[in-house]
Amino acid sequence: MASYTIEIQEQYDLPREHVFELFADHNRLADILGAPIKRIKDSDQADPNGVGSVRKVGIGPISLEETVIAFEPDALIEYTVTSMSPIRNHLGRLRFDELNGRTVVNYTIRFDDLIPFSGRVISLGLEQAIRRGMKKVPKLV
Image 1 (spheres, rainbow, N blue to C red):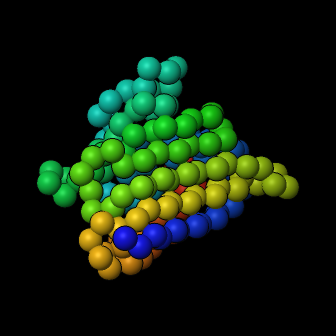
Image 2 (cartoon, rainbow, N blue to C red):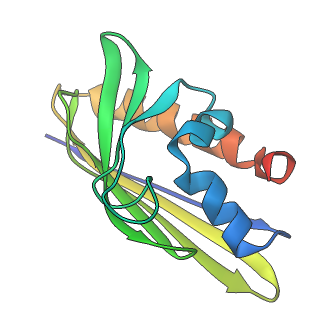
C-alpha cells in the first residue's frame, strides 16, 4: 500500500462562520464538490452535521460513506471513510482560521491505496475536484 496526501489552502474575504457553515453542511457540500452528497445520519450533537453524522458521497454502487469524527464550530471538521472503498486509513481534515481579516481554509486528505497504483489516480482526481470546488465558495456563501 502506498500513502497519499493532498494539501490545499484557500483564503476568502468572507466571515469564517459562513465559510465553515458551507463546508459543514453535508447537503451543501455537493455544491462545492460537484458530486452527489447527502447526509444519511444526523449527529447526536446540536448540529446535525457534527460528530457521528454520516454522509453518502456518490450514487448507488459508486458511492461511499464518510463519518464526521471531530467537529469544532467555526474551526475544525475531521472525517473518515467508513464504508467499503478502494482506499484505507482515510482522514480528511478541514481547519478554518482567520488571518488579517480573511478566512483561511486548510484542507488535508491522507489515505493509503488498497489496489496498487489506484491511489495516484484517486489523489489526482480528488485534488482537482476540491481545488475547482473551493474556487466556487465566494459565490455559494
